[in-house]
Length: 116
Image (cartoon, rainbow, N blue to C red; front, side, top):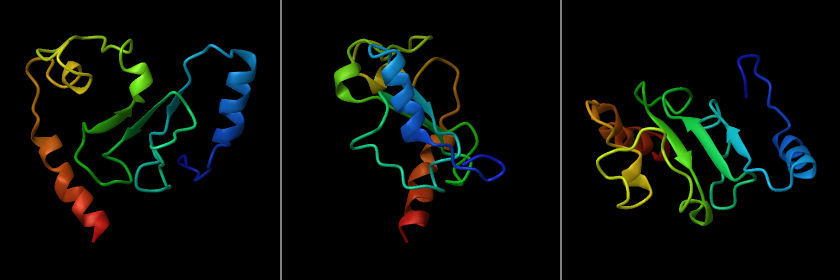
């Protein structure tokens, strides 16, 4: 959804991308989706999905989710490498230096709230 609220035709948009550029890596910016729409990452429509945790999911500011299926994780890399770069996919993204990780520690409580 957007501010309107308006749900964009995601399936049609991804289909157009795949039709016009079959080899393109399709990324969906689902900024408002987490917490407001069912988000099925087990079989995503696109090659990668980005969403914020601090909007409708009610998580702390600065938290987000990047879902990249395992078949793409060997070549998708962060723009800024972290201390864990080369260890595993997630470790390459989450420690880029002087970061405050306290917001990430609150996500378990946020998830428990939604599951209750």
